[in-house]
Amino acid sequence: MILLTQSDAWLIGDIARLLGYILNSLFKVTEIFGIQNIGLSIIIFTFIVKILMLPLTIKQQKFSRLSMMMNPELQAIAAKYKGKSDQDSIYKMNQEQREVYAKYGTSPTGGCLQLIIQMPILLALFNVIRNIPAYVTSVKNHFTGIIRTGEEVGISSYMDEIGTYVAKAKETGVTTKLEAFAKIDPSKENQLIDAMSKFTDAQWNELKAFFSNTIENQDLASSLQSVYASNGDGFAQMSTILTENVDKIDSMNSFFGINLAVNPEILSTAIIIPILAGLAQWVSTKLAEVKRNNNKKTTTEEPNPMGAMNNIMPIITAIFALTMPAALGLYWIAGSIFQIISQLIINAYFDKQDMEEVMKKNLEKANKKREKRGLPPQKSTVSAKDIINNSKAVASKADIDRRQKEREAQIKNSTEFYNKNEEKPGSLASKAAMVKKYNEKHNK
Image 1 (spheres, rainbow, N blue to C red):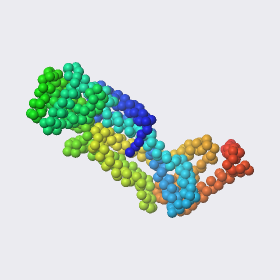
Image 2 (cartoon, one colour):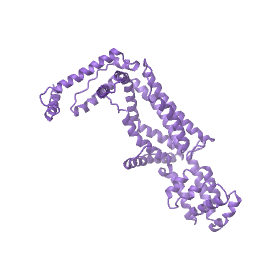
Image 3 (cartoon, rainbow, N blue to C red):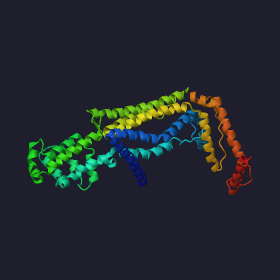
Image 4 (cartoon, one colour):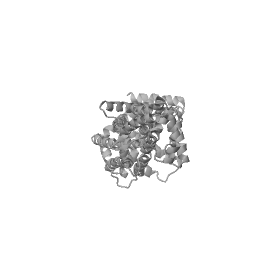
């Protein structure tokens, strides 16, 4: 369970309003061409959002590529300290691992920042997709048209009449699908819209039958004759307007015959939505795994920590898509298709990149940050030959020893340079001398 603070909720709400504005604008644009369809708007909306998030995706892919190159060295360090649980060994292992990350110009949390940034965006997206009428005014207008019609035709208390219908249905032993709807406060328009936006065909048909006095159960119909008699022609007008608006809502929500506003049913064509949602995500994750395996041929079996998760997530996605409105499943399908396409393009881009040059630029950025903190620059000892070796096999023992000696020498030189003073270690004077010597060294 993800616990959100009040500030997190506000942030997600603000993002949802922004994304809702984009979706609403897209729907209005398609209306210009005579197309009013939620499914089409969601697909276009998904591609636009994914394009806006593409820079984060590229950063994740770059970190993944660098991780492939670093893993042999990180594995070697882990093997070196295997079985050692004393504090000194743990400290040295962490220190050596940090040096590897620094050498490649990245950090252990390099791939996490993008996920943290994307999380509130994804949560906001779910809010928008699950509550389309709250953000798309053209859709909302048809629901408000139904709700406000009662006052226009002289039956402002029709929600009370629906409550009477539910009560009579219980008395006559008739199962009704409007019981939860009848309990909503008539003054809470947004709650009424939210409930109606998730109506199934059976619920709409039951509501239509009530207003048109065409209830099939004769006992129930007879018990409601006084209700119809007291409302005169109001119910007939309400029935006409209800049918017109519901037909329009159904048309907007229909995507190849599937109602995107309701949960897919197992024995219906809508079941294709959760199946495709899970399948598309599975293809996306497998594509990433294939690229990982092609770039990392190791001489030893190395378990992939994300392997199990990559196999489980498509199943979880399919289950969620089955228990939520089909619109959300369509969003997942469109998102996974875009992910597959972008993965292929990004892979092709990085295949042509000189990763040694990428490392060099990363290291330059990292050293600028170290300079601000008064730390010596980190030097990379990785060559193009190292990169090729790292991407094909686990580093040999000779390579490991050589790199270990290079790291130790670098640490020793930096330590000796900054400790050449007579001040008491840790004192303010000692720190001032360290800064002075750092400036002297880099101003030569």
